[in-house]
Length: 105
Image (cartoon, rainbow, N blue to C red; front, side, top):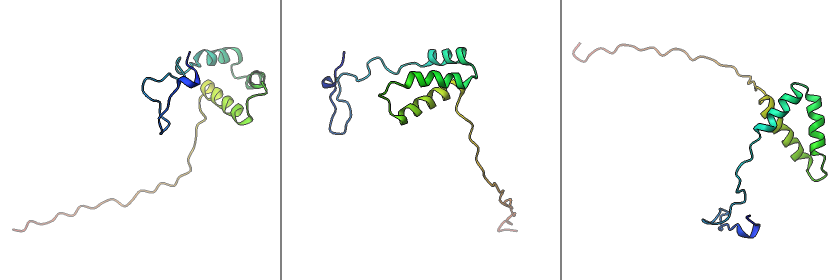
């Protein structure tokens, strides 16, 4: 297992070649968790919120991190909310092409 002292960085903060990885297992998959939430709670967001409250009430996680965790789980479960943009689109005047007579003409 890689320990903090096994991880070596250069003066720019990048990992030095051959150093241990801080995350040897790679990114954790959340697919199983998302499917579990969908099957168990469906669209019952109140029940899902209660479950998340119990999961996050460990006394160590900051409020900002709790909100981010809930946001990530919600977005992966139900998809990111659609965003709308208020815009006024105007079309410019069409470009007129005028034929230019030949120099001989």
